[in-house]
Every structure is written in structure tokens, then in C-alpha cells.
Image 1 (cartoon, rainbow, N blue to C red):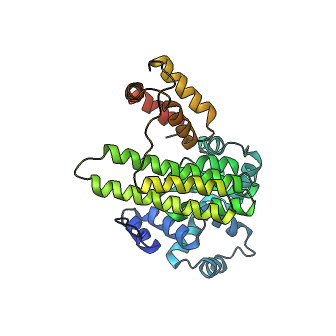
Image 2: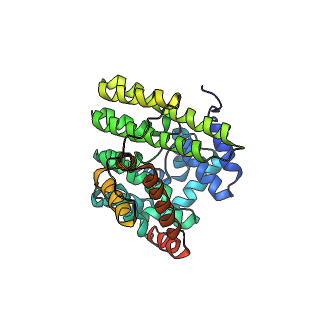
Image 3: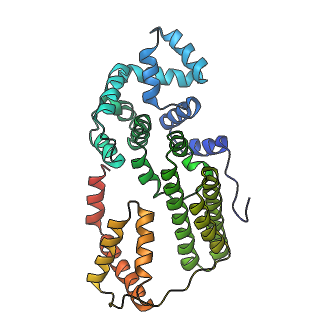
Length: 334
């Protein structure tokens, strides 16, 4: 364990912390799903396909199979009477056949935009959020279908936090022998963690800087160690060399000086958007787009790189407006 990074809390501690801030309905749902390691829709499928419809036998089955307490079982069976497990099960089959398996966000949005589907019945009755169960269901469908590349695109834009964050995806990638995607995932993830460290390093409040910077640095270094370990297991020699050089430079805070400028254009709005468009077109994931952007900017003079930053900040401020937030709220279904 490095420096100031605290070891993660136990699952029990985390669950207790979450439960303390929930109402009774939320507490029941979280306890049921955490204890059984199943979503509500999965439990409804079990209830529908059970050999018996006798409530006593169903209670015994749920208690023995999933270790649920009596009040959890009562809550679940009462909810199942309102939901119609058969309709939920049929809807899940229809959804699996309807997804494109090319764009995870698009398939998820399509499911979220139809709030009247039987799949959402439990959340609708309980007044709980639709997003989490829908996102997990779509993810499971993609894994079942073997549609791994769209998931890598999504996960590649999530910075490293703890070692287990990508375990499920890595398991499926390794099983499918997609070593190329494992390499792409790790390189994107750790570079995003490095970018977050550099951002904190240069912009932290002076009073918080030592703790915040050291914590972010340790997290990024831990990510690099896991990435290098995976590349070593897979025998990806070029990636091992590249990642090791990046990790060691970051640990020692050695950052290469800018080369002599090769693009002598003055950074204005037109050049700004040209650079942005090129980065978007050349990188399939956000971290790769950021890497391309960094390489493109290295060709400019330092003063023009600063102008790029000013133009970026100005355009971001334009987006910080109620109309834009309202549009995003409507587009993302709340």
C-alpha cells in the first residue's frame, strides 16, 4: 500500500454506510440485491420459473438459495404480485433480441426512454431510479452476446480507481482471447488516471495540494502497476516498455520538454476547432482522443498552447447555461 491511499472499506462497511442514508424501500431493495447478488428482474425470473407457486415453498427457496431474511422475502414476494414476473421475463427476451450490440449507450438510452416497459415495472412501482438496473441488464446482454468492443469503448473513458473496477470486463476479454482489447483498455485507463494526476498537480488548492496530489499520484501508479502486470501476463512487450516508461516518469515527475514548434499558426477559433475535430476523428475513445490532442498541441508554440486553453475554457463557459442543462436533462431522460 502506497503513501496516503487508504485501503478500501469492506463490503459490509460500505453497505452499512449506504443503508444509513436510505428510506425503508431503498434499504430493502439494496439489501435484497446485495445479499442475493441478483437484480430484482433476475429474482422475478427465478420466481416465474420456480417449480412451485406455493408462497411457503417460494419463501423457503429464496431463503435457502440466496440467504434472504424473512422480511426481505416478504417484500420481494409482495412486489412480485404487483409486477407480473412472467411479463418481465418475456420483456427481457424481447429486449435481448432488439438490442443492436454495437453501441452500448444507444441501446441503454432506447431502454430508458420507454419507461412503460414491463422491465421497469418494479422501479416504477417503488418510485426508484431506472438507470442502474437498466445499465446492468444491458451490460449483461452485451457480455452474453460477446459484444465486447463497445464495452471497452465505454470503460476506457473511466479512470482507474481500484483494481477490481474492470475485473468483469477483463474476465470476458481474457476468455475471448481479446488481448488487443485488454491492451487498449489498460492504456486508455491509466493515461486518463495520469491526466487526472497532472490536472490536480497543477490546479490543487495550495492548502490541500500535498494530500490530494499524492493520493491521485498513488492511485495512478497503482493503475500502471496493474496494467504492466496484465501486459506481462499476455506477453505484450511493446506495451510493457511503453507503460513502464510512463509510470517511471510519472513517479519521478519527469515530464518531457516541448519540442521546437513545427506548426507556426496562431491559435484562433478556426485552428482550435480544426485541432478538436482531428483529435475526435483519430481517437476511438476519449482517452485516445486526449492523447491525440496532446500530440497535436505539442507542435504549437507555448503561447499558442495557452491560447488553446483559453479558448477551451471560454467555450466550456458557454455550455454552462440553464438551457444547455435543460436540453441534457431532456435528452438523457432525467
